[in-house]
Length: 485
Image (cartoon, rainbow, N blue to C red; front, side, top):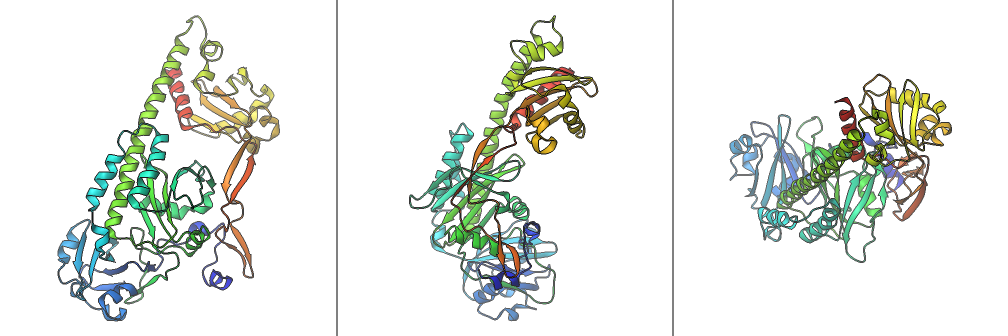
């Protein structure tokens, strides 16, 4: 992509990339087509590829009724049904698959030429086989390893990566299945700028995205008259950002597919699938990929719920034993000085109880003189459980020398706290390419540009503690509830 092409679009930089309107691209991928119409069946707009399927110029479609081009489809039925999929014949004689979507008062159809090779097995049978293959998986680690293998087998694609988001929306490849000759990204991290905010929104709305050929020209959507942009968030054939297409070219990938995964309501990660050569996709494929998203997310949620139950059972056992030991002791002594202490509940370098600005501690903890800024930071939050792993950045070296991380719960009396502290944890982070250079200098100024290298790029992460996990925060919540009882 040369500088003139970049300059011809609205300039993108690292601050406005999240606002790129990728849900209204104004075009579709050429493996499919699109036509939209109103409640009276009057065609409002169509892709040039749809006109080609009908054997006419695109302007010929306008003012016509959709029924003229789909003579065997009952459009009363299309409007009545919340969802509609069918294999039908166009008036031109072309057999196509159609899938209905709604955008306000407008209805549009994804249209894909029918291909017998994609329909040798029904989506229902493929989904059933996929569900069976997820049985007898008992851990999230085993789930990750098996899932990429199963998806690659069922989808016949060159590389499948399981991409998990962290709390900052950076991603890590936690499992991978691939052809031997393809580069591996296993255990590498990708910065959140690789999947910007608006792309994450689309992944949550539309759980499947495919790109059949990164080099194929997109098919323009033409309006019968000036209209607002058509929201293609739910479309299977929607075209994609040129930035992302170039990103895939830089990875030497010709086709891709992404399937969203959820743990409960939380957007957990993606199955990122890449192929070295162009692919053909059908709307039957779309149903199967949706089934993968639904069933894999269900399994992931079940495994996480089971893990949560085990953690809860263990945490509550530790809490009960800690609080019931030696009744002659005070609560503070039970929490800090017993054979079981709060450090057995949540691993940390030290712990402390603060009452009236005075501190009792166990293990490594800041001096009392360093407490005021920590307590001031905690008091800004209304949460019951508060966690930071970046006290160096927030409060400076005087505090961070003994604690880069703090986990806190409020004790029943006002301004009294139970605190866990962690020291700095220096770690080496392996990125897929330099995550800090998403821009390129051009004669038009800096432009956001896909990274051209995904080679291993390491950095040492300093100034932070080991992060507090969701399970550790829940353990703190259980203890907060117990001491209030």
